Length: 217
Image (cartoon, rainbow, N blue to C red; front, side, top):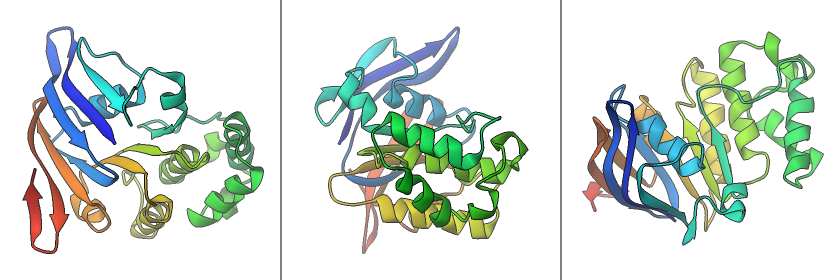
């Protein structure tokens, strides 16, 4: 579970997150909203990549700044987070080793995300869509308890989008929590358990998907 309590983030004169309080339960939660609504800022704050001016963020009860909590997180932002001169396989095996995961895990994700034909190429030579899938693979390589994906469907075609959705669905087991920020709400809703909506840094709505539709919480 991810807990945000009165989280506020300010960049200069811009209020990026405005007193956001929400409990994100296990499962996949979509993060929706227009450009500038605070989606990316929210994910970076949960990942520990920026420090809120006010409020607290906890992951399974532990402060998200705790080293154990941070190692339990897999994050993929707008950049790939990979080394351009290394091949895709070398990158994923490197990150796997840093987290104590096996090299075989890297190969599994390469196959799951349809990246085998690019596995030996330097990441710098990959297309934007392939880099996006590679970033998702990097976030998943240590089988994290918490997964944070920021616009994972940007610059990818339908086939690649389906591969990303399958990889996330395969990862999703009991006890795991994900936030997926996207404009492609339809893609995320296909496998999400809930959703939150942000507008101008404020939480507008949160809820869970049920057989009767979206139920506010």
